[in-house]
Image 1 (spheres, one colour):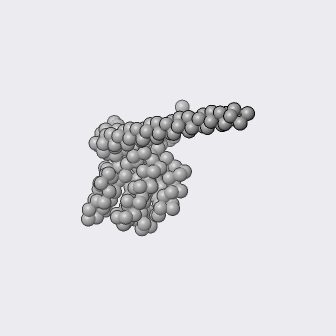
Image 2 (tube, one colour):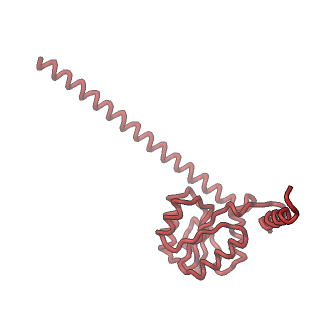
Image 3 (cartoon, one colour):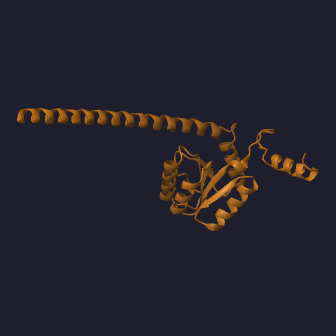
Amino acid sequence: PLPNSLLHQNILRRTRHTSVRSPGATLEKASNTILLVCVTRKLAEAQRTLLEEHGHRVLVAGDLRELGRISRDTYLTCAILGEDIGDSMKHAIATQLSEHFAAIPILEEYIVAPVLPDAEHILAEQPAALLAAIDDLLLPHGQRYTAYLEKKARILRERVREARETAKYITGQSRQTRSYLKREREQKKQNEKHRA
């Protein structure tokens, strides 16, 4: 049995992970690794602190090189693109993320208008909205979570279809190559018979 102080700490840690939207529903947020992409260090630290205070593990990338390193070494639950990132950079980041992770949920913060059509969007500089959007995206009862699962399933089905088409093409090419080699061997044997 745990001593009272350890038991109390364990209960506090578990209740801290309870969702505000649905009493009783819990999520071990510590298992969620969120990628935060921000150019401005001050913004990155403020958002990182906010997310970590709410139990999330946060990795920060400031450019595509850091993003590539993180993507290779870590499984990411979702990505947040800060408002300080330019439009073309947001597209490049979304492309790189989709290459490493099938349909990773992306939460785009914006000031004027969102840029990424396939991302979830929230108005910048609203910490409560950011936390609510993350919960909605990561908790199984969230609308964004359901939409994300549907999107991921659609993308995975498309990748399976492409893989099947590629396998079918490779099989066809392999048959053609074997057939060609067989004809070449037979032609070579006939040529040798005629010479003899």
